[in-house]
Image 1 (cartoon, rainbow, N blue to C red):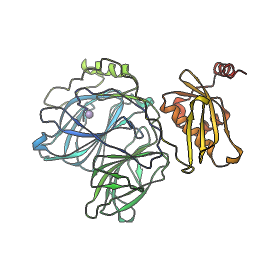
Image 2 (cartoon, rainbow, N blue to C red):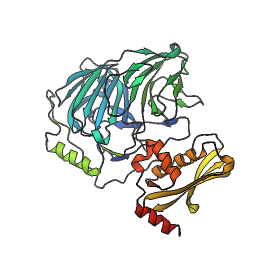
Image 3 (cartoon, protein in one colour):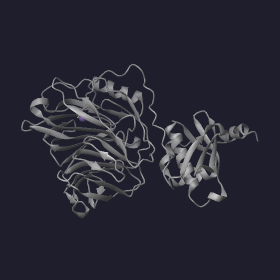
Length: 442
Ligand code: MN
């Protein structure tokens, strides 16, 4: 599908640090896809509160739509870069054509995954026999090293696999779950599955603890331990650190259908505009110019009886990067522990039942936060507090849009064991070290 918003916003997306809330519920916004009898979709990704779940960067839910009213789907040739599109239908049928020469039908329970790294163009048209259209359109951001990947198209029909305890069934279209493994290759580890939960069913799904997960509810209702509840088209987010995804269908007579998405936090910033995923405004502008110039970069879609979609006008200004929300109180080791920024003291403090149990000190060098000393009081040793303190401090550095410099040996050691901050870690150069020495007056 094309993002056919008339004035698509330019969005800078980055992985957000996890919050302590067991489930973060993202509500969709309605987006009309244009045209006289426009289909409207419900978009949960990207949005202000969260732009990515793993490499999943776009999630539209649509239907069930009566095609006689909406006109169905008729998306003229349009381009993509830097992403993969995942089409998954619940009802209806869509004919896909692309500039690789692929011609395929998208049907319920079958994944079509198209790679538009350097550039691809495609069309999507619901077939004449389709009376109801109902499904999801998902995008996967390609990591920087593969963002120019060649055009590709994959089709796969996953066998349903039973959920534990007769709770229902799953169709695993990307990644692995419950021993079902999709053969469709991806550029980052990913999970994508349709789950159907029987009425009244409760299930605990073993998942990769390093992944963050999203549950996009299609029909029925879904509850989480602790009472959070999803309505249709809402997306529940689970931060990394869960060994299981625990969900229940509270209805006594209706099944629940949900799309489970997952992946390790993406760790790269991307700019999304229209149908492009890039790393900068200039990269997006260059792709737009190439499309408007009919460049070979995107190729030609054969067999579509109509004109191409013109690219919308770029925004007049380079939009400033969006910052992610500041994380809440950190999780664990228990509910009486908190990490806070004590800005005047140039340190983050960890509090246990209100008492300062430790701190990590820094000085700011421009947009670099230079950490040089971490302490946990003896009375609180051996409880893993230093690790929680440093993790939350570094999450806060990320959410502030800053980089970090590890001069403190403990912070440096932490970074050798935890990959998640590599993209915001700057080297402790001799220049920084002597600046810090002067700053501390020693
Ligand atoms: Mn498309």
